[in-house]
Structure formats: C-alpha cells, structure tokens
Amino acid sequence: MRTLIAGNWKMNGSRAMLAELDRIAEAASAYSDVDVAIAPPFTLLGEAQPHAGRVWIGGQDCHRAAQGAHTGCISAGMLVEMGARFVICGHSERRAEFGETDPLIRAKAEAAQAAGLIAIVCIGEDEHERDEGRAVEVVACELDGSVPPASTPENLVVSYEPAWAIGTGRIPTFDQICEIHSMIRAKLIQLFGEAGVRIRILYGGSVNAGNAASILACPHVNGALIGGASLTADQFVPIVEIAANVSQ
Ligand code: PGA
Image 1 (tube, rainbow, N blue to C red):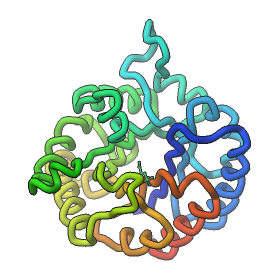
Image 2: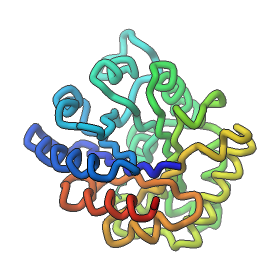
Image 3: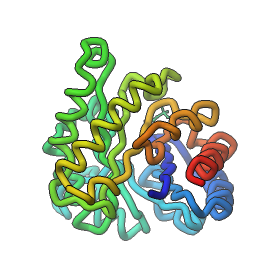
C-alpha cells in the first residue's frame, strides 16, 4: 500500500506560502513512491494548483449538499472545479468548534465521494475519553457512524487523530497507536471485506520529523495527517523523505 503524507494548513497561509508548496512539490517529485497531499485554505486552492506538481491539493471541509442556499459554505463539486483530489471530513476541530456529528460527517464524505473526491474521514477520542479508558470504544463508534458504507479503497482514507495530541506536542505511545490502528483495520475488514485491507489508515497529531519514523513503523499506519509541521517545506519535506524510506 502506498504511504500517504498529507498536510493540513488549517486557517493559515497567504499567497506567499505558495513558495513552500513549490518546495514540497519538488521533493514529492523526488519521492514518487509516496503520495503527498496538501489542504490549503479554500482561498488558495485555485492558485495552489499550478504550484502543486504531483502533490494532491484538497479541501479541509465541504458541505453535504451539492449546491443551494448555504451561506459561507463550499460544495465538493466546487473543490473539484478548483483541482482538488480529496477533502478532509470531520476533523476534530470541526467536531469541537462547529458541533459536527458522525451522521453529518458521513453525509459530507458521501457528497465528496459522489463528486469524485477521496474523503479523508477523521476519528479520534478526546483526553477525557482516553483517561476513562474508552478510546477504543469511542473511535470504533465514530468509525461506524461517519464512514460511508459504499466506500472503496480508492475513495476513502481514515485518519486516527486523538484530539489531545493535536497541536500539543504529545503523542500516544507506539502500543496505543497499534491498538487503535489494529482495531480500525479489523473493523474496515468487517465492513468492506477484502477491500478493507487496502483502505489507508493515517495517524494524525503532533507528527514531526523527529517522531515520524517510529509512528510510520506501527502496523496498519499507512501515512500521516500533519498540521503544524506541514506549514513549511523545511519541516514537511523530511517527513516525506522518512516515509519514502519506511515504504521501501
Ligand atoms: P498537528 O495537527 O500536526 O498540528 O498536531 C494534526 C491535525 O490536526 O491533523
């Protein structure tokens, strides 16, 4: 399975940051065994495309509807028109800040897939749930509720992102990541049969060049979703290099 290293710029970035994308694209062309993706803010999507080379460009969110009276929202089809290959659905910041629920996230992922995009569906427990020993149960429940039942390995990526590890510099132990990723793999096989073996499962939360090798070595970790360390080529490119070495 090809490793996917995806960056999420969140609400960061101006036109000047496209220079970082140029350097990321240059590195991506040198490591063609790894899939590389960047989700810039919506406002940069169209302009990012000519800088992207073989880097996939994608959205950070989309609406569940194809069009209509939804002020401030962006549809999956609009992302496609801007050259997007994927969209992130149900990031924990969307769940926490905008009250997004599993059924809404599933509907968004379905809309994305119907428009021809890869849906990167995010699931993960918060700190309280981890402390109560409910991480496996919570992640399993989010997977059941937010992954579209008609998904394929070509249009679905699942990303395990414990909310307490996002932007904090704290990461789960190797064993904790293995436990959750093995459970996700087993559930994907239960849901999709043989195809479940081929659906990529990313880890997200404080990934950087210092910890990427050990995280990517965990069984059933097929890549990473990266926030802070995707904002500069200096931090992001070494992670792509590490992924290229791991996938050899
Ligand atoms: P971080 O963000 O790498 O800054 O922790 C990860 C994410 O939000 O996916």
